Image (cartoon, rainbow, N blue to C red; front, top):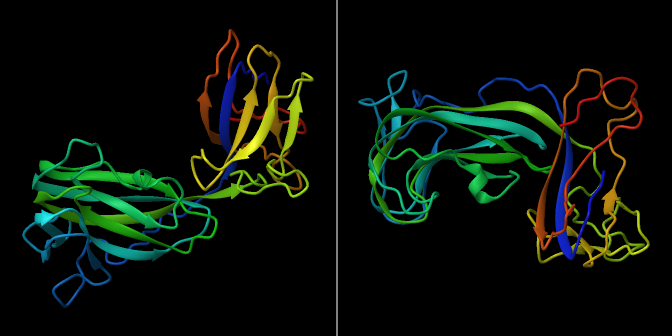
Amino acid sequence: MRTFFSKAIATLSAILLIVGVGWTQNLIQNPGFEEGTGELPDHWATFIQTGSPEFSWVSDEFHAGAKSICITHTDSAMSSFYQKVAVQPNYKYKVSGYIKTAGVEIGENWWEGGAQLRIDGDVQGNWWDNMTSRVYGDSDWTYVELEITTTEDADTIEVHCKLGEGLKITGTAWFDDISLEEVEAVGQWFVNGDFETEDPESPGFPLGWELESNTDELGTVNLDDAVYHGGSKSCRLYRPANHGGEIMIKQTAGPEPYGLVDGAVYKFSGWIKTQGVTGGRGACFITAWDNHTIGNVSLH
């Protein structure tokens, strides 16, 4: 690995994941909205952000079965039918369903208006990562899906069938055949992979990581609470101008006690932000290597 900096600042977050096998059972109760004795289907509640949306449980429009749910806006920004679902921590889930629209408006920004499925609660990522693509205008039944990953302390999430986002819109949306399925378990092998914890013996340096450089002029490595992708910190690497060589932080991580498993797929990923990274070989990247396994190993 070679990482060169010339008057550069880099911040990064890294995580090493192992993929497992998940079930395909639908975790949504009453996913087709066929059950219920009142005005609304069983197991579903409603949410109103602003305005006076109209919620209905209808039998004149449906994707399958005999019923669907419907939301109509005349003066509302966002409203939804939603259901709370128990989930496992550090798990990947797929939410999917069908949406039909009539006269549904959208805004100038990609996230404004439209009809979508949305996941709220104990999920990783930013708020805009937890919504499917928008369905809008006059659209026939359209399939949408989204994968999310729960947090390490997750116990519940909310699955929303929602109309609108960010501004008041008009229009009607129908939702049917909603599904939430476990995809795979996600295991965390890194210590302090999100750089949230400081080493008590080395103030400002991330716990569990080791500094390495091939030059005496190390530059600086420190936790940065002003720039981050998730959480409240990132790790900042700085190399002064006109100084070659490399500077990196590293950590030995992997499954115990026997190392990487034959035939398994491992995903190594993270987020990098740069400022002023220049030079003929200037670069900033994340890499992984295996020093212990006999045979061929595929890391991607």
